[in-house]
Length: 167
Image 1 (cartoon, rainbow, N blue to C red):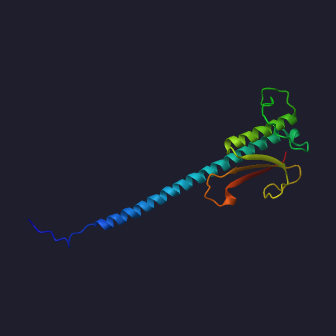
Image 2: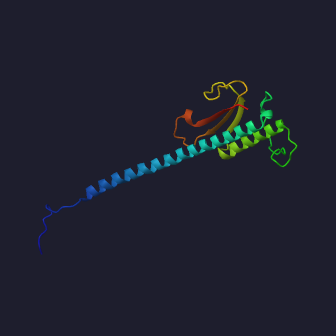
Image 3: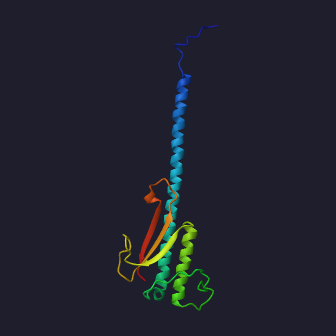
């Protein structure tokens, strides 16, 4: 039986294998945490897209019912959207239709964005806004919701979407 010279044997030692496995494990943990952050940011982007779609839908409703929105006052959203203005009845005034549209929009905001989302229509120019700075007949559609990526600073935990609309 030939003698093996262990000094000339080539290969990996157990310590080298353990070190490389630790480095690989740390890399995989880093990738897993990046995947979690990417999923949270993707959800934030989805909610921002939903807010965009809702705002433009309400903008179209306002422009379709100019008479209901140009009276100088913003209609109060009804507590319940069951006013018969949803197409089941043709006996709605323009003011009732505007109130129904406002209620429907607020309900959609809490359904599609988040249960704690708020949707408000105010007269423009709106104080403290960088988006809604137009003339008096303009309206400012504002939606606010909590972000899903809570690892951000406290000032970034909620986000706003504003759209200025002229009826």
